[in-house]
Image 1: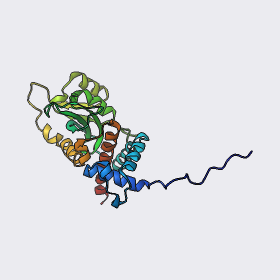
Image 2 (image 1 turned 60 degrees about the vertical axis):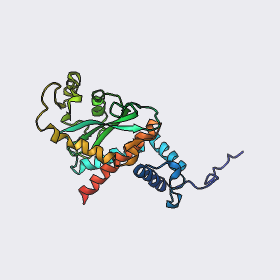
Image 3 (image 1 turned 180 degrees about the horizontal axis):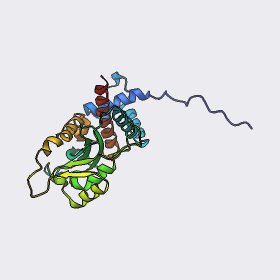
Image 4 (image 1 turned 135 degrees about the vertical axis):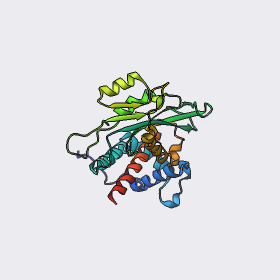
Length: 252
């Protein structure tokens, strides 16, 4: 008996175009509205459809690959500064709890999360980690450095290590400094109990600027997703948009 032929198209309605779903996800990222309030008249289809597509793309690693491709384009254009990188953390409120949440020490112990960020000397986000709000910054330093993806775009093998890492006194740790030097990275942090390194604040302002750009996406200023992977999908997409804007500006 001959095998049954596969139908040309599955029964049921035609799937929503990926471009429309992406536009719906971007609308939620920028405006921070509930999925069920996504305006159907704009052609995004239902919020449930966009949410499922976001989940599927995150599981496939689409957003991380997108950010890596954009970083490679910036590197090829000479827009990444590897001379030094800056690290810092920023608290956000987590309205619905979930993984990687905890009592915030800066928000009357309300449930929150923290974004840990490393960026290059021009403020381009290289890697972001989401943890509970009560996680100490110093514990994430090496994870941030090791989390920088191998970035191509130049002759020679992809690069993933800056020459120096700048941080404030919360990143003062002998063990971390030793590990950074082992990775051939110069640690530049003010020591606790001593005056701040002169001019360090002027060099580190770029990480504060990057946080400001990242949290302009309203969905990242307050966390609504209980599932950490969905929140991280929005974070990666926000970083990709920052990279895309810098690339577009460099080409203009």
